[in-house]
Image 1: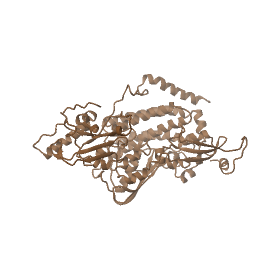
Image 2: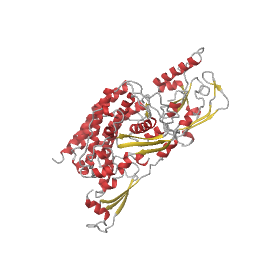
Image 3: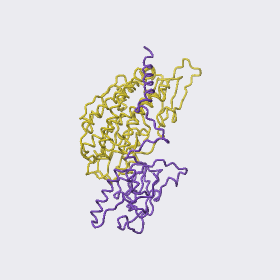
Image 4: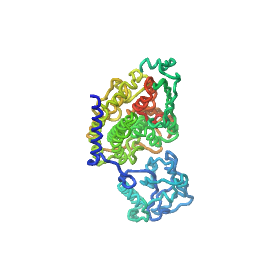
Length: 194
Length: 385
């Protein structure tokens, strides 16, 4: 009978409409700015630099080896190596990045910098509300904006951060058995911006 | 196409009920609401009948292949996500497969199973959203597309919790996969797959016997098997013409030979068959997924011998291809031993499937052009590269 196919379709639409009041499976809209679905642990968007102690300058894990700069597919990282060395969080003299910029208008969130970093110094952030009124300097993140504490890292990626800390503690214990492992987790950070 | 329309295309059109007897040239796109991406068609119309159609593309050209030749082998992986942005997982797989062929890398078994699971989930969400798009092309604006996107969103949530990103997954690596899927992810994936047939049943009720849809799609955009084979058409488009060619069966790449599944075949090669091909393939994909969940072994997911950074494959060439949701997706790589490929070539299924657009459209009305274009299933990220 002509029209029976359309009626069948209408029945499906009606079932979906009425079902949306009773079944959670059918009503999945999240009213975004007011409601937010939780981000999964693995969520990534832009990289940030980890520092260990309270001091965002001295505690940076980055030693300006420039591997991430070289491997970055869209070439959005810019690093200048320091001329002098200063002690890193373990007390070992290391180079440090005098300049570390990431142009997040170029970054494509591929996580390759994280994968290639041998010092666990760069990780992926979860901040996504990054719209700016100005499109050049405001989207170029300098070292100061990129540096975030290990505590922050623990808050956004708890499982992954615990693994990284265990790995670093093991490496530190192997290298210098006299000193205790860095207790980075214990240091509270004043930074709370998420 | 019928001979009548070809005559119409070659000889000066016979004017029967025209006022001035001139052909009307319409530029459809690049921002026509129903064109799939930035794609333009210069259509010559006799009344409402298409007598000539010239596709114009390149609006989204990003120099993908040249970029691939100047970045490292690892660096090309996230760029492949951006080819067909609906199916980043299968793009990753095709590229990983060709690098693995080039450097003779073995992939651990668990990684192979994870790849199958993710590729079939990709097929589910691609076909589901294609059906939604096709219906909205026909004027069923909103509702079917929203139903399809509701299901797609569940799969994208799975991708996000595994790989960190909904669409730009960047998940696979040559020699395995990047992150392992835990038991709770598997449970969630199983739930999504178990709930999927309900959506399919509903969706088929919505469309299969709908008279308007039948009138709009049956006998529209018919393609013969000869034309399909000669033009190099692959994927559901080819199978809708009744040609039994599925790389999962033909090549048996990955662990596909271990799964039992059937390859749905069409009969007429018209838009309706192409549409149903997607619906039937989704059912087979659910079967594959259920088998893969059962057989999934434990073990490593990455070949420990592979050095991702500063990866230098031996001199040689390789072509890796997989059955993507849109057709045969292949990557051709020539290595000269340096960290960058000497030549990097993509065989994009939707670009090659698009080449027959004029043959399918001649003799149909301009409204049918949208349906035919929709049934080809193109993504401009892949067509223009």
